[in-house]
Length: 233
Image (cartoon, rainbow, N blue to C red):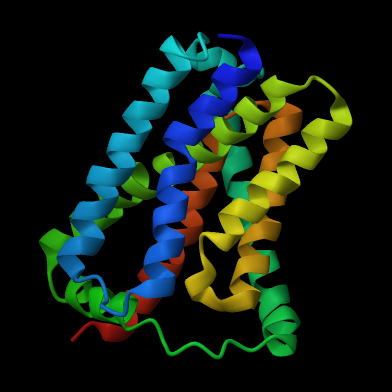
């Protein structure tokens, strides 16, 4: 099996199915996830796919973890610092998009009650709060999302070494990631896609996974913490 086939197969196994299923679910199903679902599914699915990505990277792509995910030079404290910087960029984009993009393309979808219900439950259950802001956020969401993003990018980049293809792959991957969040409406798809372009380009330049995980967890975590405080008794 040649290199191109192996990388396309890896994408087809680890990346496409979960995204297609999520798109299908949001388009066809009306039942919301429960709080238990919102805790268990990220750990099971996110954790499981993270292991699958590790397995495929080692045995199908035949690359080490460092070669694929962390080949750039750096240290743990620089990863933290850059992660904080990317978080600041995320929030800058967040506020700019709320003032522009979300005004131009208002979301006609009904409010996401499953997130509201989850926040209410978390606000009044310290144990669930610890689980959510611990393994769910850092492993089931941030680690899974960024491993998936980087694995998709690396597999696409492995197909062709041309720089223009690498840049095109960033936009291709970011489009898929944006569309997978279609429940957030058109503006949400564009917003998430744009943020993906930013962090994907960072990875293209510096090849460090840590800052991506840190920024994703902080960006989501800070927003959740803010909203949860609104629901505390």
